[in-house]
Length: 205
Image 1 (cartoon, one colour):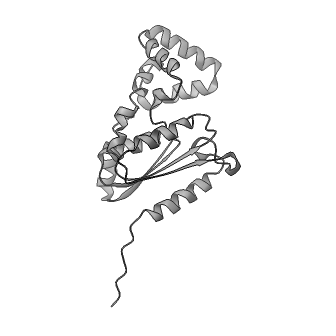
Image 2 (cartoon, helix red, strand yellow):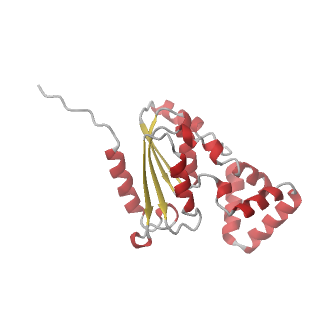
Image 3 (cartoon, rainbow, N blue to C red):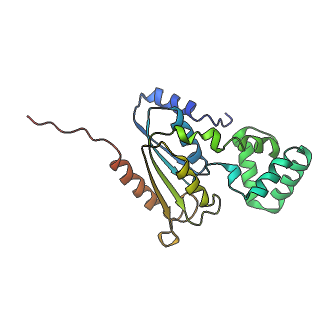
């Protein structure tokens, strides 16, 4: 199935099937965008953990680059030709574009890019997120610049609480999705979930 940015739909299907309430939703990389979208519309999500979040894919590059990309989309042949050239010259670009076309069920870089720009601040609806939130980023993420961390935090104006952590090179968690010390990231997640999960009081007698 092609990816649908309305992540509340598959989330609701899973929660319905397992009959779950007050769950923690974890999103890694692009999943970090998707969990906020789901939380904005699915009240059974009580806690949100996002690792290496993009927030808005068109805010990742400098504005002139983003504006040029939008302009380029008006010229499909040129856009696809330039994309194919970049794919030949840069292995990471090839992986990124191939993977994006696969996820979105599209056949050209242009069609995939048109879907990618929908993963933006407006469609994420961060102002609708009212849950407890944990955001994890790496200070030297090669894929998602650390500036996106602060943008996401600032956009969560109605969250019950926002806890943030930027992992450093000294911790070896400074890369994308804390690759290098994911064990530390898991420890942080586990401690945070425990601290933000209500435990019923034990009644004696």
